[in-house]
Length: 314
Image (cartoon, rainbow, N blue to C red; front, side):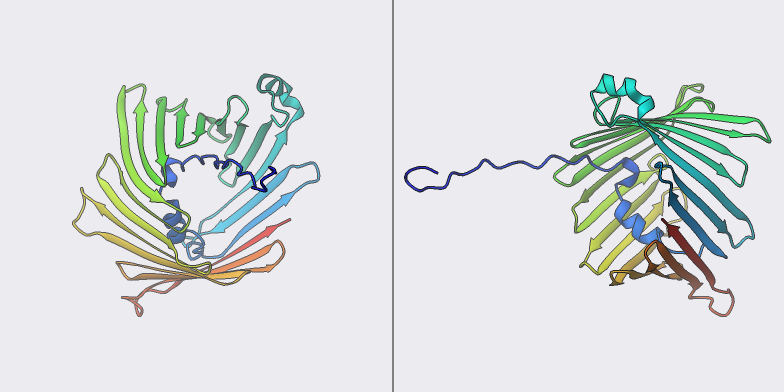
């Protein structure tokens, strides 16, 4: 403090810029509100069990029974191996460098393996190698994915080495909440662009809006999300296929947090299909969800669809 008694003014510390979302997540807030945590798509109990061993290996087991009578499930194990990546630690000067290995086995008898190096080869770069093998048909697949994040920039590249090969790339630029992104697919063997899309959006913590044009700029959608309060969320999405009919599909959804351990959701679309869901934390590590969907225009003709979801974690 100076002799005059004046308090010195410290220079303002600027907050680091956060990378924008990926191209597929530009409308994530509204899409999650409309599509997630509605459990009527499964006819029977939808089960998910998460656990973690003392050595750091985590396991996820999933099971689902559809209304068509088919069952599906998978078991996944994930392990982060730090010692084996000593060479990465030396090259990147990062003591936390390591390889993440994820193995998945599905009831369709598909064995999938994913290797990940996140933020180790270069700052902001995540590299993935994904392989899948079907023993019954001897089919083998291999994909390489790259994710690159920097302040105000987010790019991704997905390469399918066995089919085509093909490449799908997308990028998003962000500034002061405004977002603009594009996506393109390329088939190496055909030497042709197979698809392209574009999107613009605006996102802040309280609300977000996005307009996307997918399927070679033929399907347009506009989505809106608003966090009204700490208990109430609302959103809507309109979709129009320029190659189809002139009708515009509309979905409206809302979420209400009843208390810190439970919430309820509701949505309805332009065809009169209404869905309701309820999710509650029964105890630490045990979550239950129930849902129902019904056709409000044909209450006497079609039966409602019910579903349940149980999640155990420890």
